[in-house]
Image (cartoon, rainbow, N blue to C red; front, top):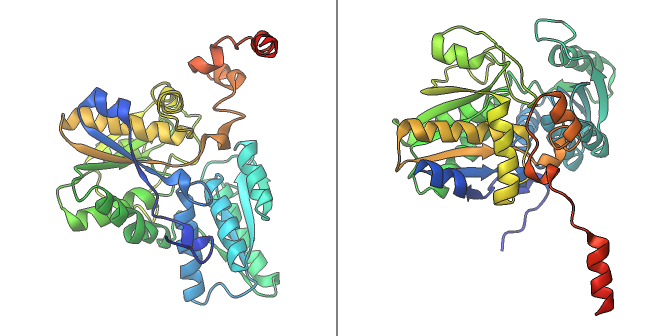
Length: 349
């Protein structure tokens, strides 16, 4: 029996789950790393822990210090929970467009939450750039100082996946892996796993599953950062080459529209019992495309990023889906069972 000494020590070593339907449809083994089973319920727990540990080791984060970050939600949750376990306070800056559930969880974890209007990165009030200025200001006033986590350009993020996620995938597949693919937010997961796996086997294919509205598909396909369309998914999609992405070679980039990804997220829930967010739908769509392009008999690994309950007010809300012209899953349109009549019959017997 393994007993973790603390919550941070329980991060990682997540299960690998075979996706039955996707595997059957493609003739490949499509496997998903269940990152929603981290203590903070997302893949971002790994980056949060690595960023904090590196800052402590460098002497930048002192006992009683403050961690400041701009995030779409999951990194903020991870930082707040890991920070609480290690004695640090967190201040999180989030675009006001993100789901209520993520904001509530950040507050529940004890962080101070600052909501700002959603602005592009070039705007000085973009949530990332705002958080950097806030960290600098707090570092001057907080008794024990403050640091900016800076997940997008702090390569301690990528290192978490070089040291942890990638080697775990190699071990869980017994080295029998032909391709890895996922979406990009900060770039840490894709670039870190790619580096770890390619160190084991140079010919492993690395894929990118990019939502509409992001610019990386065009960059890796045509050499130009160019964004088209939009997506309801949160926490993924990037318009620049972050420090975590520098040096990454992508063999197979795919652009995934919402009307392909969102039904897959619903299918994972209805057919495989996996309640995950929209980014996981994008990842599975990318894995399916990668498998079809590579042909039957290959093993493809992707990531199930976080729990779907983080998006209940949007992704699993019929009114929201209708407003975005997205299809409703069957369980939202199915007529409810007439439970009162059933109860009456039970009572009669």
